[in-house]
Image (cartoon, rainbow over all chains, first blue to last red; front, side, top):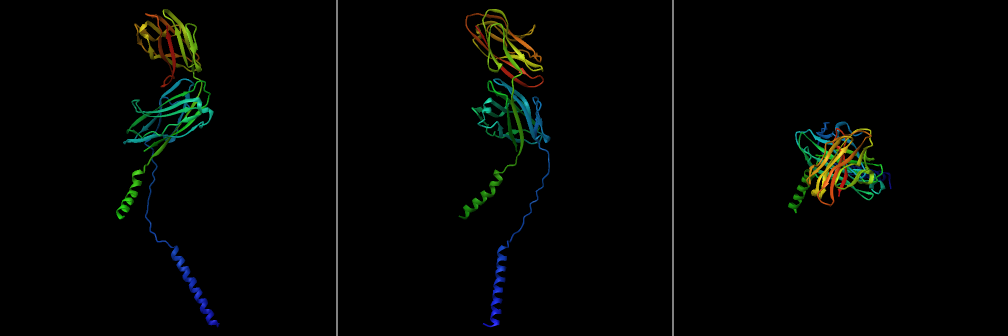
Length: 188
Length: 178
């Protein structure tokens, strides 16, 4: 083997290596083009929101922008307590909006002996004339809640406020405990 | 195959449009605390009265004829703030035999709440009475007359209203008149 042959073989190897790298480079490349999406997110106030009602009692509160409401209620043992108008849901828009009530959480949780202290906590959506449009009733069986199903969508007309009416009742000889609930009001 | 494929593609393109919805969720956080009621019922000294669990319902038994059972039951406001109360009939049985009966709040003066005359309920509910904080009011049955020997029932709500609101509780009181 002479020196010339060695150079040729090295050159061939280098050429193969170079071609391989070009092939790999080509394989990794992707041909693409770009569409352009330009979202414009403007902050606006909601047209549907909570408003305190005639039975909105301390320490109840409506949060900033009126999109959150804490409702302090009582329940008496062996007697039904009614809040005819603790909270309203108002539509200030010029068009109707649909909304529904959807259960999120409740404590005490199922299985706790404390659950049985309650008989029911019933939320009724009424129109401005006081006619029921939907009911959202938490009842109990033993130590478990029977949580309400998500309501159907209800149509809140423009420039109208509807009422969230509440009835509560605790079991006879019930202990002094508190039930905390989270309810989503989905607005379309 | 081509037609089916085109149809499936079209449906796929359409589905995001038809099933998508934009909505915002408001959050309501109610908190219901079990507390003793502000108002309780207590036994009277006339007739026979039975007070049930938590003193929030009662049964009163009286016999006709009688000019007055002046203290069949008392309504006690355990809170320091005033409350409004009244009585309202929500049911009855066999009252055709009652010639007369009047159920009143009695605090020295009378506030007539329910009146039965000639077998008819001529006044089914009374005016709201202001029950002051830590005060007690008596319930009286007067002018009680029956045409036959039998038993009649009046099923009544005692409404306890928080002043200047529409928050109220309803206590069940059963009047049994023999």
